[in-house]
Amino acid sequence: MFKNVYTRLGLISSVVSICLLIALPRIPIKSDNQWLKVDSFLGGYKFSLLDGKYNFDFSKLKRGLDLNGGVRIVLRAELDDVIEEDRDAAVESAVEVIERRINLLGVTEPYIAVVKVGEERRIVVEIPGLENITDAIALIGETAQIKFMVLKDDVEWSVEKYQEYYLNPTVWEETGVTGADMRGANVVFGTGGPRAGGQSKPQIQISFTNEGLEKFSEVAKQNIDKPVAIFLDDEVAPISMAVVDKNLAEGLVEDPIISGSFTLKDAQALSVQIRAGALPISISVMEQKSIGATLGQESVNKSFFAGLIGFGLVLIFMIYMYKRFGVLAAVSLIIYTIIVMAIFKIIPVVLTLPGIAGLVLSVGMASDANILIFERIKEEILWGKPEGLAIKHGFDRAWTSIRDSNISSLITAFILFQFGSGPVRGFALTLAVGIMVSLFTSIFVVRTLIEAFNVANDRFKVSTIEKLTT
Image: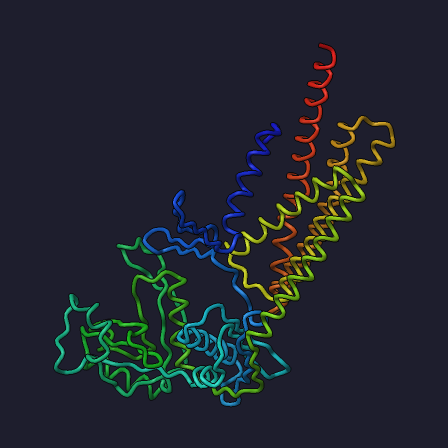
């Protein structure tokens, strides 16, 4: 595949051009004179697809807490009043509530993780771009509340007005049934009946306490063929709005089931939301730290300067040691940097200081692959092979060593990403992306550039000989 060197050069040029447009920051292009009037920009593009369903913002890299500033809060989950088998679910519910509340702050890319220390469970929350730590603690520290509500007596129910009532909190009134009357919510599977072909459909079973079941039974009997809505944290729209079936209301002796056109993912998400109010837990602040944006920018500047020096030294070393091969390797490293920065914006990667370290490390690994290839080529030439064959053997025979070393590094990065937290995951992600791109540039790009150089050199020699003989 892509045996023709010009086809490969065209592919590389296309990839680099697209990645360069993505990687570039927004560069204004302005000209206002008698010959040319331009007011535009290059790079830093923003666009959306399918009427805003997919949005892309390549204007800047997303930066983590240590680069962008923000707050870091460590919370202790108070689980003394929660039975052992429900503790993991209770903490999971608390994390769900905290994440939703952080999103209400208008910030993005929060990092939330549960850390278990002995029997104690802690929730680590990192919020980049937030300055007011007091508001953050006040918001995420509140206990989740769930309420079952019904339509007011003077509100007439009809299916046609479902959406209208769904978004109008003024038509609802409390029933007295709350999360305190619940024990949990789980996804179960029921038969869809003949229309569904007898297939199992995901449903949500709400588990009440004995007293809660009696209270909910009375609510159900008084609201047959009317909706009972579940509200969480005083949100405007309910998280569920199910119509009470007559058969259910007359014989409610077991935990009720919410059925509907749920996918398994939707049912699981809704059950977690309901559990967030069903299993409220107290949390206390163990540690709070605010990181200023000035410190973050200083860290960026120092990291950029260090990376630039390292990158420059690598280029000098490669050119000094391997001459024209080193120059082509240097070109491939520049291409590598452009592609990696574009991928970071596409994913998007939340860049942290350890993430920058992973990127710099992957540059060294990309150079290491080229060194293995070039040293092998030198050995092949010393053994009397012609240069063209030596280059072919150099790439082919160095590949196994490059493959094995990079696979082992990718496995390590995967383990760090899977089991690490926060900055460790950022380091692992940038390292893995860098390794995969380095395989493309150190093998495919460098080989193509060397072959293109040799073809051009051979044609130049032929052209020179023809001129001299005529």
